[in-house]
Length: 117
Image (cartoon, rainbow, N blue to C red; front, side, top):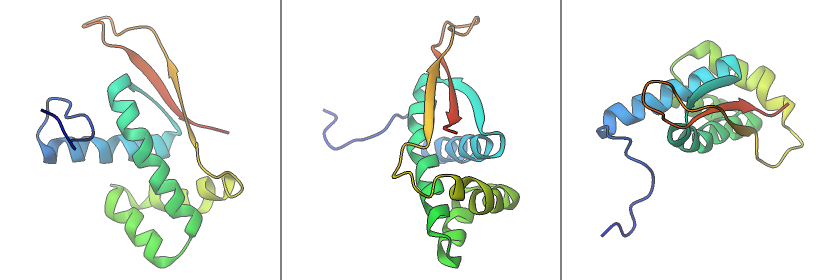
């Protein structure tokens, strides 16, 4: 039974999955748009929105919490200086998932995850 087990495992162990999420969130915030599978995008969406919410708080503690998750200090600086001020009046929903054609190799459902303008 799967009681009280949240999230997708994506056929990876915990450390690999966390590294994948950290890299995807960092790339999403760096390029503001990524193409990935639907399952990965749905997991990464919540994590990216939490980092942007930290950016909206704009304190030293929030900055250090964002650095703890992101893999690049320049991306963290971008979140606090450019991305978070863009959403200061928005109470959430900073990302959008758009479905694309399935991947040619294995027919995996692909999506584009992007930041809302």
